[in-house]
Image: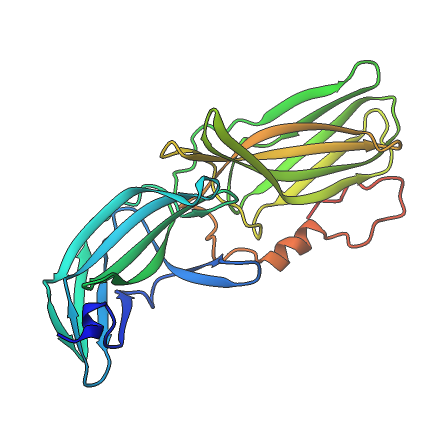
Length: 334
């Protein structure tokens, strides 16, 4: 045996992973950095994950290994916990016993009924991912290759989807009633609502509606909460008077939303809130938050064939420039 082989150096070896039906599957794009994006094939719970692990050895070279294996892994990575990973799915098959390889060799593999109970998720402090990993063990160290796949879970639309009605205000100064048509929305849904001004004794400058995503990771006392505003729209410009009704129509398609996640593997949750904010002429802010549930619907609009981001933005900003009227009741009307 050569000295190079003893210390783990040696021939040029490249590992690639090809998944069956990868070209015909829908691809999901996701961010991997500030400006970079990658894509992964879409899978669902219970589907087999199969393909080929291809090991290529340099010309006229021999690769001595201590075994080759393939794994299917589902893991949750907590960014705040020094990148600590928690595997909730791990399946493994041996592809080759210890031996030698020359040229290019392809090893087929299949993980039948691969469990994928959670959706893939990339958040602020947590990442849930599924991937196939091929490892070739050497005398010292190993050569690895990973390939990500994306997982979605469709839900049956809820049988009961009650509207949201609430009254809020400041005693003897402001009294408003707001109503949203539903409390549960699919990812390509439209939020429809109305805001009633029952008492107005403060000078309102404008009103805005935003969608807030709140991510909770860990458990008490080491629990972290991060909120981010997904989108924000001004729905009124000017001072309303008693009896005014401001309609709301906000298209969700085109925003980078995920379903609501609750206590995923007892590691994290992601919730959504409609945040209604009124700003007076002294720039004081009055707000009310209401949680809504977002789900991925199997029936209804095809998530990949409905409105594009630009079309949704056009719908949500259809009036263009602000009108010269005292206030705009049509800010979000299609």
